Image (cartoon, rainbow, N blue to C red):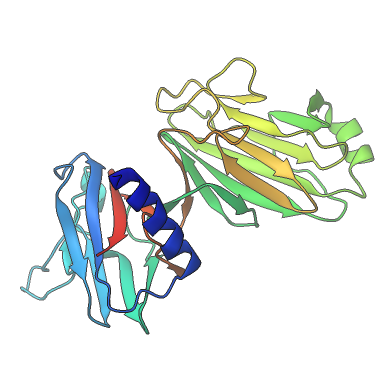
Length: 261
């Protein structure tokens, strides 16, 4: 019964993203520095609330309203990492570019140039092209129709098609870069499985972590064939976005879940 009510409430919130009279709460799901299950923040007044490593600076001035410790010592003394803002019964969130980065979990998202995606311990940057391109970077592999090809053939056959460039970095990524053409497009999977077209050995990845599709524009989906992963696919919050019920946020080796009470 409780599960049915939870699903029903989730659907209601998705259909009505104005949370009049509700309080936003962040609960710790997993963390290297906080206790899972703890409530980190409770917000109900219209204002801007800051999150970061320190509550006060060396002069005793309040820097952040809520503290999320970072295990990276280089980032410990940095100030405000992200903010949450309430306005007209809506709550918004945005990263401030000074910490580990604040990411939100996604099920499916339209890709655009400049997007940063996080899976496991790996990150990858998005670039999209809709005109003939000149390839200057060292590319690990080129794909047309779901199959690897060489650079010359790729350039010849993709002049009138959309092209996607993925630049990976992080623990096991080896800083590889891939180019993918929309011509005769077949979905490309990223993960640990041997049959993934883009494969990494990161132990925090699922066998099929995420899938890239093309339907007039590039789409990234968590998991594959409609099955979502247990660890999630995250996108960097470089633009302010609305916080929805049950949205998960990853920052400073901590995963938070937003809920309205």
